[in-house]
Length: 205
Image 1 (tube, rainbow, N blue to C red):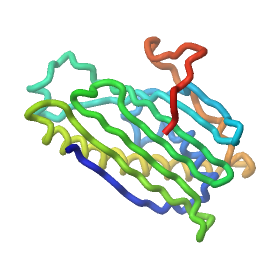
Image 2: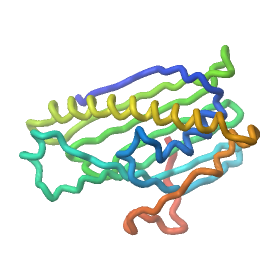
Image 3: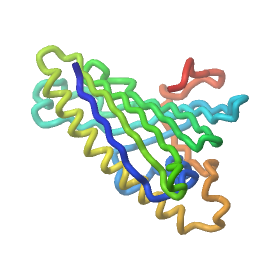
Image 4: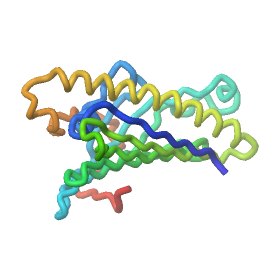
């Protein structure tokens, strides 16, 4: 069956600032488990939507009991794809992330919607959903419970990291650059993760 997570959060910042903070949130002191990030693909569609695909590398420390079950040589790095769609007219940002490796052990799919609060334009609403599953026979339930617990912990850190980045943006000048996403920092990735120049994702979200 897997596990499901859902949360609704109100962010006390306007949507354009949250969008800028989203692109610039790494590195931050609350997300030290995120090792690298890079843009794999980006396109502005005829309808003026910004499509992006990024690759993130994160650490993957197993719980103590799992260290005795799974091989010690198992890679501790997790490669995560992040697709996003920005609609500048509707003031929405939709993201979907999922892990590329360790899929049999655990798969985590997350979907987020950042949208301007129409009743309070200086606020942004965040709706987050996640689906956690495991294909390990006999151990799926404890693995999924562990995955859900870790997901909750990491998302709490992610919100602190986003708030940290927002506080930095709000103290920067000039103000007209607050919504500029071109300042996103690119970081090196392992050679095997680098796409070809013509690679184009099949679909978004």
